[in-house]
Length: 265
Length: 327
Image 1 (cartoon, each protein chain N blue to C red):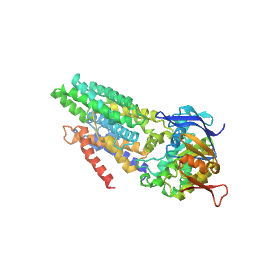
Image 2 (cartoon, each protein chain N blue to C red):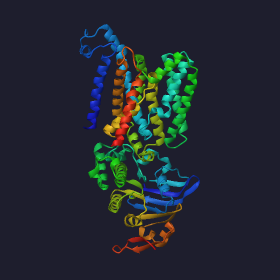
Image 3 (cartoon, helix red, strand yellow):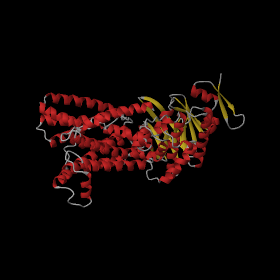
């Protein structure tokens, strides 16, 4: 069985407008794939479609060679974890209670297993010292890390039961400070390599993508402009096409295979 | 204090309250003789006391426990389903439907308890079903709230129409029905309704994971493997089957389903593993206490139970809101 999520001619309409047009790509386990693109390029629609929130109108999405549409909500939750952009909670839950929900697709998991997954995920997100705090009292960046920890618990549970997992993230670092952005991306990359996890993440920070993604997909008006390693995809001309704004790309002064993106002008 | 301790404390107070409530009333039995009798002394209670105890008090307290637990749990369920701390079963047209049925039975037929409660039950199922079907037009549960508002408005106007044709005696019956009472409790009723309500309660108590996941949001709940369509049907059916038969026999009892889960969340947090059980216990406790008050405060007459719960619950709820703001 090939362990990939594969899109083939993926086309999605939203209120009669074609938002995704004939996308073909693969998400393999062990890889972090960044999805970059201007606002309204179709990034979130792509993620929602892969998460099973939106129906696809043409083409097919395959998870491990099974069409997504034959899997019900529960099956999907036992294969992939999703981090939506914002989650506000109006009820009084503790941080730990939120994080533990990641294991809900696996009610058969033992309490010992659960606390092990929670512990590891809290450490990944630098939350272990806060774990009895109330979610509502946390800052925006801390809440984002809590949601990410919940997704990591789900991923760990999926790995435990099936051997590999997929994680779909919508701007996981948007509210984080630069230190946490780097640390989290680094741990995501390490996690994806060591534990058979395929990570697809929407990003806006080009340098973060250049540093931590194994591959980037440039999306423009619902179509893929480029799908390659950061050094090949993040070129001045492709970026200019993607974002309609002049951007300059230079070689990283310390690392030969890396690039830095600067705003030109 | 751990949350297990909190539940144990609730159990303890509930048992004490039940002992007090069955032994005390218009005809006082006394705690001591009752406990002696339970301990095996057949002469501790006379004939009348035994009669009052078994045919009136115990069924009444049991119905109160069931009703309180059902109102507490369904209130907590609705609040999680709609992610709104002010939700309660009435939101989807359940109570309005029940009163429409009751009013129709009182005014249009000869009345009678069985007739009124069957009509209330059938009618509450009907209005909730209408609200549900209408609410399905929208993919999110907010559609259900909007449909509920519309159905409530229509139902209340129908109630008004029927009331125009009522005579004075019928109006009095109507008023008393709408204020709620446990006075009709008997063993037949308990045997008929008890299993259904207990089954509904167990069903909802097992759904704590879904309810927690819903607090994150509908989309997040889907990502955790709960199909929102299925969940919506399951929870609404669970709530209706738990609470509709009760409203049908007790009439409207306000504020227990709203205040108790609220109080429980302030005390224990919003994790439904605890909220549901604690809402059941505190709902049962508060309703047993309220009914005890209702039948002793002006003995030998009786105050309507719904009047007491609203009279105490209303100001209490205002206090809760102000306290919440002050924090």
